Every structure is written in C-alpha cells, then in structure tokens.
Image 1 (tube, rainbow, N blue to C red):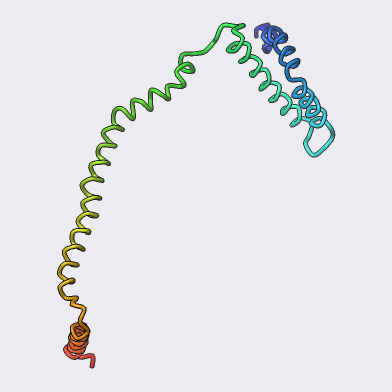
Image 2 (cartoon, rainbow, N blue to C red; image 1 turned 180 degrees about the vertical axis):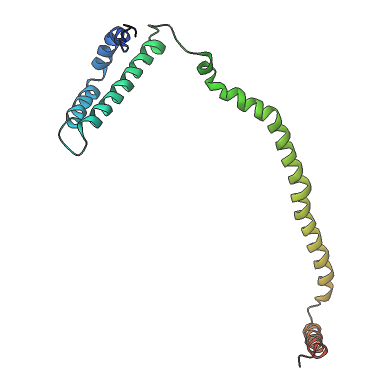
Amino acid sequence: MTDHVHDHGRGVLAQLAPEGRELKALIPGVYDGFAQLHSAAFAEGAVDKKTKELLALAIAIAISGIAASIAVYAKGKFKVIEPAILADAWRYDSAVSSMIGGPGYKSFDGVASFDAVVVDGVVNGAGIEVRRISGVLSKLQTGLVRSYAAIVAFGAVAVLAWFLLRGVL
C-alpha cells in the first residue's frame, strides 16, 4: 500500500480559476442559467439523488474541460500536452489518404473501366439494336390502311394455324 494521495486536478482548477471568473464576467446570463439548472436539477423529483450527482459531476467535468481548452489553446497559459496520435487526428487523415491514393485509386479506375465497357456497352448496344429494328419496321409502315389490315389478317391466320397445329381447336 502507498500513501499516495490524488489531488484530482485541484491544482489545475486553481490555476484556471481566474479564467473561469473572467468567462463568468463575460457571460453572466449563461452562468445564471447554469445556477438555475443546478437548483432545478437537485430539487425533489423523478430522478434519484445519486443520478443527479453523477449528472452534476459530468457537467462539472465538461465545464472544466472547456475552461482548460480555453486556457491552453486560446490564451496559451499552459504547455500543450498532446500525444502525437491526437495531433495526427488518430492517423485518420493519413489512413484515408493512403486508401484513396493507393488501392482505392486502382479500385475506382476498375469501377470506371467496368462502367465504360460493360454498362455503357449494354446501353449503347440496346440503342443500336432498337435503331436497327426500327429501320426495318419503318419500311412496313406505309400509312395505308389496307397494308395494316393485311398485317392483322396475316397475324390472325398465323395464330389460328398455331392453334390448329397444336390440336387446341
């Protein structure tokens, strides 16, 4: 067992107290709102006391973090203590860059090639076939009613012959 005692950041909070007072002077309405929220939160109600205390602790930690970030980054009061992994944004940017610049680039080229050859080939091929068939069928469309009647009669005879040959009629 050791006799080590944690101060739970009291030293940092003491150093941040002047910034906290300055912030309170700049936005007193916000602090008054938090005071009212505190009074309402600890009033008797549907939430038990332990939960309210944990909520108050979470809010206090959040406010302390905001005050600390203002002191460190905006005012330059303290040395920035930031591991390299955090300074590099958890290496997210480099991971995305290596994915997009490496295998992602080749994958996207493959998708573009597939689109140009297969998808566009099917679409363009269908268009070519429709144009070819419509060229043939346009020769059958003379605009004369007797030609259309002959085509309908030929179709009726073909259907009747099909039924007769199949033994349906």
